[in-house]
Length: 82
Length: 415
Image (cartoon, rainbow over all chains, first blue to last red; front, side, top):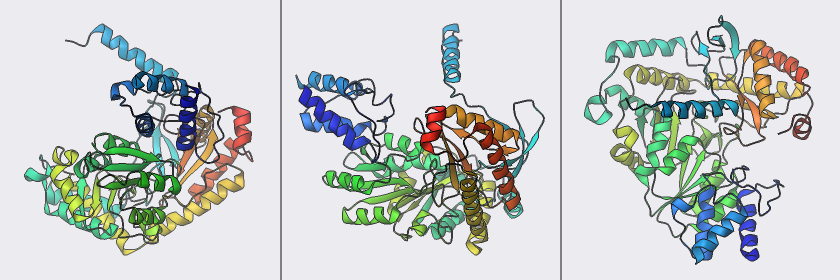
């Protein structure tokens, strides 16, 4: 699980933080409600998870709440890995 | 009647929530034509107040230009008030096609199709051209109407960090398995006033086989040496596949927009773009005014040259006062205040000083990026700008922000 979270966290930092943006992203940092990821650019995160973990996340489950922290994203991935 | 008490209470509560969050938008009533000097009734019911307008998209000062008004009046006399039809039934007059041809020549494209607004053009264009075999790769700061248009399209969506060419290239490589790739950007970004790196975008598009889409609403008429737009400024005039733009800003300011670009893509919009197919034709009075606008600005660059002078004077003046502005080349000049309440307070005090500006804050801009967006016009004379600078100096001193940078303002006021 820790490895999964680290992978997601690294992707979020690389994909969403601009150069010079030194905000810390922890496993419980709010990503969407905190303004790091917006709903418009969230799609690439969903695609990354589907590709990386070979899963399908239905659109209904890809809610801003489910994508709001590294913790909740990891839980979502675990759910669909089963 | 099915509008129950429960429904009414629900929406009343929702509206109260918007108000409490400080996000409630209120209109101000203007009792004069658009221009550098306008008469504003605010709050509603108050006596009219003469103020200098520094927040209009009236970049070329043509919104109330006598020759444009006269041309519109002639259009009204000769082609009537309305057509009561969509374009393809009985809503296309000779002047609609004439305006489309003028826009094609001005923008340096192959063909053009008018829409009721650029919002409608952006809402319809992607769905008309692309499908699930394609990918749209958009700059993350594109206008909301593009975001909506992309959501209506079945093609895959992706985004790249604002103006980050390395990130865009990464995405282009990632999506080589798609049939078509389309890079999507604003020409001038409306909130920051910065220009897209269209020269680099076109080079990347050529290298990685992608089409280029530009919304040039905040550029058409004045960016570039002859005002053709961001593509002219960046040296890629004639190389953009799809341009959308508006007649509602520099080009007369009434309403209407267009999709302009490769012949086949424009024709696809004529066949399939739903906002074109299912909304009324642009009114003859607006078409006639817009033809005159293009005629005026194709003959001389006098107005865009004056706008450029005004922009340089204004940017220099704000910096000399000690305000923190976003650097750039466009007549959109954001005065950065970072804190939402501060932005609202400064805007209110500026109004009291006779200067009409508006504060922008989340969700219109990112959290902690609150600002006052000032916009220059060729209708401004130096006296308007000097009055605006004097007011900013007085109000800035009152709030103790002169000479402060981002860090200091945030330390003092919070984000």
